[in-house]
Image 1 (tube, protein in one colour):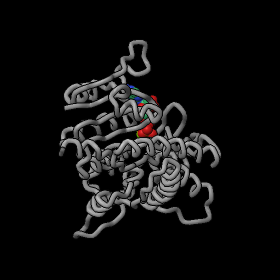
Image 2 (image 1 turned 45 degrees about the vertical axis):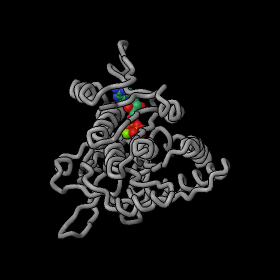
Image 3 (image 1 turned 90 degrees about the vertical axis):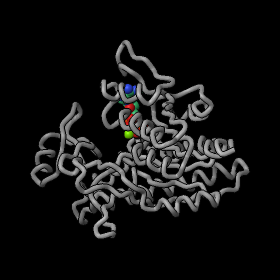
Length: 313
Ligand code: ADP
Ligand code: MG
């Protein structure tokens, strides 16, 4: 009975790139992608799962920064405030669409977006050495100017990109009220964009500039809420060894110790697949039952065990 109950609570993390990339299309196209995503989530709700949804915000926060930079007329907002904006924007779109998709299926459930803060540690090394690339690519001349203004940037194949701290998520500030709302039967959209990073000083909260990894926060959310399943939906169906090479091997079921070994061996992209596998490992290590990485279109087969990569104890 308990196991059955635990297995019904599921945290689903959806990718900011794969499913919600505003750079890929017009607002109409964007709405279509959101609707497709929410139709899939509604099907999962219909199967009787207690769903908590979380999402990435990489492209969206990048766009907000670009708007601030290009405009030049208004004072730029700090990153935590930009992160809050993306939670509101994406939360609104998902909340409305998911409500509609549920109604179409005759399911009367309330959907609510929770503006969520996540506590991080000011002494986390990522604040001194930011590594998370976000936003637009800039040509060298522009990048040099930005770096002259103190903006940290890195160069890769496509050009220069801003890098920001991506601190470890430690605790979800709103965890108690999120728990209560779930018990009330509300479907929640929470900890969007990895949560708004905040630090605790003398027991008071203050925002800090950074973007927390949404997979790691999703994992923390799932274990904090006692979910049985943590489902990460991205744009590939499985995590793979030797990814993109001739000898690529897609992974079906792996244990935590295998996952750790593959991480050490460098099989997963830093900042893309690696945090997903790590998030899955952490979830299982803190008592979760099943962690799955899959693509949106394979969400239901993945839950049924016939698609995706599963990480188990
Ligand atoms: P999301 O927006 O869903 O977080 P990411 O781009 O961060 O998506 O991560 C998914 C990407 O990870 C895939 O598109 C794929 O290109 C990349 N990736 C890197 N290493 C691997 C791997 N070993 N197996 C599968 N995908 C990988
Ligand atoms: Mg990602």
